[in-house]
Length: 474
Image 1 (cartoon, rainbow, N blue to C red):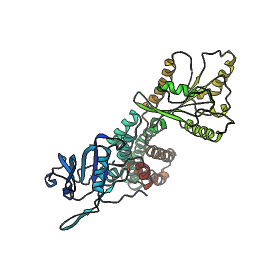
Image 2: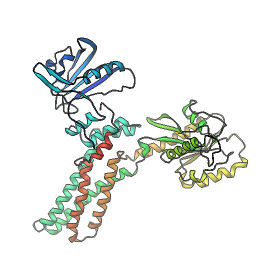
Image 3: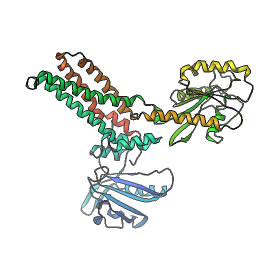
Image 4: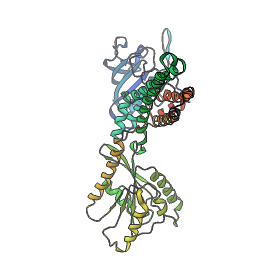
């Protein structure tokens, strides 16, 4: 159950993984800024909201840091609560000391008695959750923020920013308005058709449905071009042991990241590194060599590496099969069940005359699933690498050009609305006037789904799914 307690919260809103010049500490949910006067050298009563002030931070009459203070007064803040933001020196020890200063307060008090509850450390995403709860942002904007914070590509980043600006939500609001017009047209047909004329009422109903269905159909098209790789694209190299995967992996990275050896099974687990291609961060993965039978003493470890590799291959954005024509592969049948993108034939600098049939057999088995095949030749490797990178860029750009909706909850609801709308369409196509009451009944389910899409109805498991990706301090 997604529940957070009320009361003051505090968190570091910038990265705390390493020392930095500046760190931002954010506090929210307190009643009065004056509660914290004893920690500041400036007079907090005289602070004007949204202005920046320099102050010493004080602990037991000792200055522990010079900080920049900004106060956001409710409701004109991110959370719609009173918020203080402190820009402090970003040494991790200093940041933790300041956090401990505020977290150590059990109950704030003056001579007149207690004046406020203690501050606690915020849960992941709690600042944004409070903004949602206090209607400062919509559910779609929260999802857009999630996309912005976790984007691995410029496309995902741009869609996240678009959602934050409310542009996608406007499309959902239009769908909702068209749905309401459709419902009104049905009510007109049921209760007032005699007043406006039966034919005219029916024509208005048909027009309302066409407008509604056209809009949901357009949105549905944007869910069909989706590929998980648009969010977190993996380029996976796989094949038999000693096929040349690790050599190709190191060549793409331009560094000796994977161990290259003539000993079969050198790569026991997958090895991965990030690589940026035209503003997209891909994860390049070198998997354990596939083979049928493992005789050595470490067979359990290598088998686990193969199992993990197969799972990664199935979910990869670009699947590259690396083939050494001079060795025997035992996983050929399973390999060719994959949706292959590229086959790279290694050792092309050697005499392949005795292995031409094997190369041809691989290409035949790939059939329509194979997009391209290239050769790993001796000498400069630049052309080969360029072909791999160009193919990856083209595949990504082609999918992104269809402007797919990336957020899973949106895609799922749009698909369900579309399917339910197709059922209603069958009733319209039947051209039976007695079906109007049935249409009205069927549209209730459509309306519930639309309400969930625009965030009017928000199941707790949806919130759990969204906020699990948020960091502390956001």
